[in-house]
Image 1 (cartoon, rainbow, N blue to C red):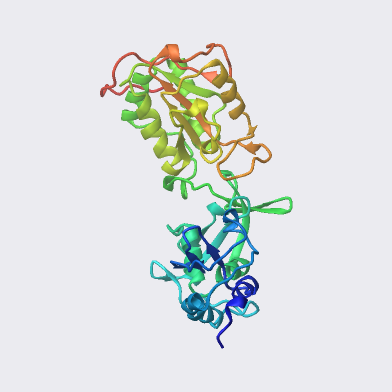
Image 2 (image 1 turned 45 degrees about the vertical axis):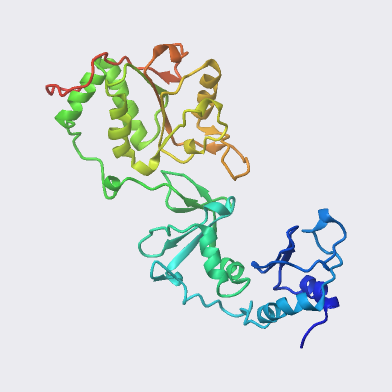
Length: 361
């Protein structure tokens, strides 16, 4: 049955499955489909209220005929029954049925929610918005129904010492920490083995003084298995091996997913969520000023209030990252060497080259 032009606005406003917007260019967007060149008989209260509802809307018969078929098709389409079990078996992610995925939902930041295969534990590469569009292809409201029926809601936390799913108080948490592959099934050997000769060569070269080298090795050990107590500051000429220690050796030990790097604008940036979600936070060529020194002390406390993008600032979070700062120039580091919050090992002035292996300790 054809509707009169007078009921056009009423139908749009009252329908639970229709959405529309009219732009200044006289274009109608009906459930995302654009119909251009609206007749000039369309009249709204004022030019500044084109996108606000409700407003009196008058449309001539010629225009209504152009959109009548689209509206009736949408209204008569088969919609999912909100009380019936949702059937998403027809949707696939990279050829795998959606039913084989778990929907891990972030209660604090829905942008970070994701799908993960139930058996392989591999997360889907698609963003949540893409998944939402695919679900909506089954019918309007399907995504909301899928979320209500299948989503497993958690607070996301990075907790290297906890299991993947754990409960704290009345809340359930999803642990985003991913251990390095070598740590799977690893246990401490009964006897501490001597490290490889190449590592001994490198550490003797980088840190010639034995007492300093022992402390640096202790910091490296704690970085891998717990958390180093001081902020480690590596100061020395380019080419001596500072980057090799962090970017290659420690990177392999903590796992590439668990090391985050500071941007060059670190001192002027208020967002440092990488410190919360890593075992090692590395600031390469970062200057330490009087102001940033105090900030680093705060960040390296056991608990710190860290601002994250797209997330509300909450209570202080437990920190798991050991902090390493590297710079080629001593005048960029405003520190007192006696400050116990910082460890500034004496490093070589020689460029790195293969050396003869010697006992490391």
